[in-house]
Image 1 (cartoon, rainbow, N blue to C red):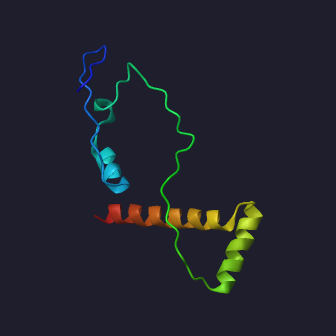
Image 2 (cartoon, rainbow, N blue to C red):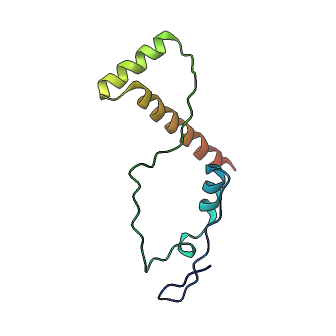
Image 3 (tube, rainbow, N blue to C red):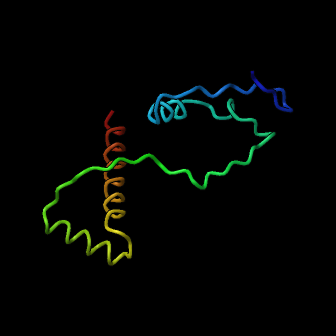
Length: 102
């Protein structure tokens, strides 16, 4: 059932998603103001919310892992976190470059 806010705007029902990729695609294109009643905000506890992750096995040359650990140590962060940061930066850079080419 669709709800109405004070402004008489009909709030659309958020669809069910099969996975996070499908949900991400939906929200990339959707107008969120059509799905949420800004006149009646709802408090939510998101303290336990964590992004989905997958464990992988990655073989690196010993020298590279040593260097990564040295950099991580100098930044006072776990080396795995540093590797995730490096990967995220490179992925974003690659995706940005592809968008500019198209």
